[in-house]
Amino acid sequence: MRRRSFGKISRKALWARPLLFLGALGVILSGCSAGEERQIPKLPGMKLVWHDEFDKNGLPDSSKWGYDVGGGGWGNDELEYYTEARQENVMVKDGYLTITARKEAYEGHDYTSTRLVSRGKGDWKYGHIEVRAQVPTGIGVWPAIWMMPTESKYGGWPSSGEMDLMEHVGFEPGVVHATVHTEKYYWKKNNQKSAQTSVPDADRAFHVYALDWTPSEVRMSVDGQVYFTYAPGPEDQGDGSRAWPFDQAFHLILNIAVGGSWGGQQGVDDSIFPRSMVVDYVRVYQPER
Image (cartoon, rainbow, N blue to C red; front, top):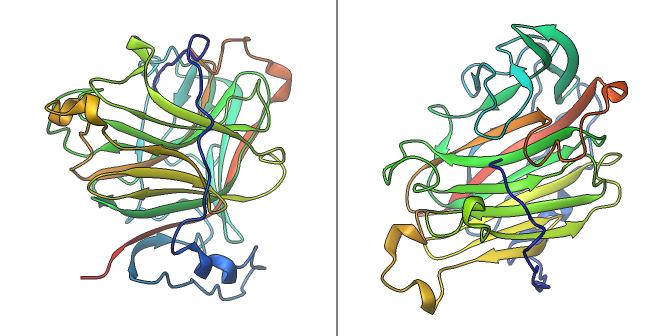
């Protein structure tokens, strides 16, 4: 969710291949009706360590989620004010989490939204993290599913890293992005490691956005198809955490930004609001010991 400019970056055509253990995900339900029990699939060699199926109506489960609250741009020139436990901006109903960005005056800002975080309640080092979601489009909205370090043991951003499972800038519908930032590779240097893929119905259908994270590599995928891989190369030998800060616990963030240095590059169309991101589930698996 940090600012980035892709105008000068030539994107490599990254090969795509199914995740080794995602064959088991063929049994994932495409959706459950209200009250229907959901079958959570097992992944070979993995165990489910944390999940939220959003099966209790009301506000998000406070034992699993907290909030980043406030305005001030969040380092990206964002325009919204992130509220806390406000049902106009976040709600669980009938098995789905909905985060909604609104055009309204609130705490000196013209827009409201929610930035939901698992920090301190869901923090993981390595594993398979997946989120099944439908994301909004529209000029000025910037939904994201991403991860930040819980303790930042290598220092402030970007030194301790960032992993973005999914970003979708509303002025570019049907394109999703995966990115990592490190001290060596990040947007201010215009060299962040990133890729994009086409998901034409991202705003009309649910898709599984996933991260596979090992001690030596991160891979990001949509519906089991990997389109981004990052691992330190020979040019990174001796750079340590500058190139690979991903050996510490990270937490998950779900949010919709309004405007911002990337999401607002074509302005904000106030006529589109409200705009929502709908999440079916979040699941975290780690290797069995």
